[in-house]
Length: 239
Image (cartoon, rainbow, N blue to C red; front, side, top):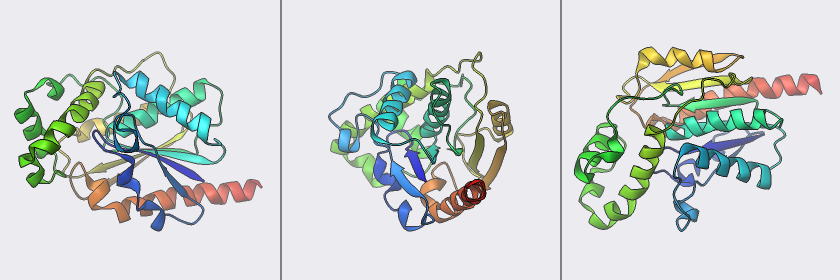
């Protein structure tokens, strides 16, 4: 089974580089490199969410067999994962076994202040409040000149994203991962994820902040193994 993994804002595919060591042997992590970073640094950044979803959809349908697979996305990657699953269904392709959305608000418009429009210093202060950023990097001008445009483009994509309420819920189990001390997520709204699937919505809370996927990767992978082990057993029974 392939596990297609989508990173958070500013992230590259390398954040998932060690996952195969802890995933069960029947699960293969396939990190997806988004445009404008990592191996695709020379490519244009996305102008909006539709572009990112279309790009990832093309990668999956061009380079992979969508036979037995699941999708995982953290933060921005969680919205892409959900919209990707929706696009896959709308195109009549085989649905993923499960969709994991991690540190991700339900896909409704966030009316809070737009971080992407802040001056660079204020923008980085907001990001620092989420945790997960090496404070030494804030004094590295070369790094900031390179990284801030990527981050702002990603945040602009998130902030201008509009969910189409005419679309039906996806017909796939959703696994919703969150952290107890994540300042970016409104915990009282997380339960709304249940309305975005016609199947089961499974909630799991971890210790940590917005970047718990890095700090507690072993626990996250353990949950993925458990969820996809159930799928493996069902597939074996059907065969």
